[in-house]
Image (cartoon, rainbow, N blue to C red; front, side):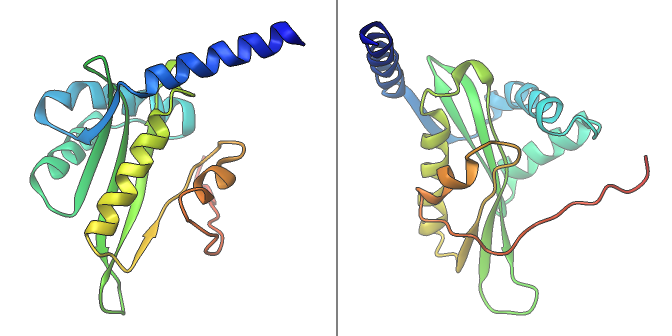
Length: 168
């Protein structure tokens, strides 16, 4: 038990040390290929039934760089992008105002537990609040305990989303 506790304390200390040097910032042009690679990993891990579309991802990055309604945040550790979060700013279909919705959210496996995800998500929430959105929507797909994690940021359930595959 003492050895297990010591390992836990060491792991926690390493995580805290590492988290101090993880930075969250907006995407820049130089991040393009790294974010494309992370998006490919994300698709393979989270949606293997779908086909990754390189041209579409590059167009998404272009929109994030040059259009105001899509934003991509990146988490950086020792000058390497290790995760990203993409969000859209959209008007309501039948109401005044707008909402912001997180669409993509990924941290590479070797950096999970480093607080990179928490820093990305906190940066996203701060940005959305500064935009004065009416609401912020977020989701975590396929992660056990993700609903508890996301509630730490003040989110609450808002219905249920379901999926039905069409075709093969």
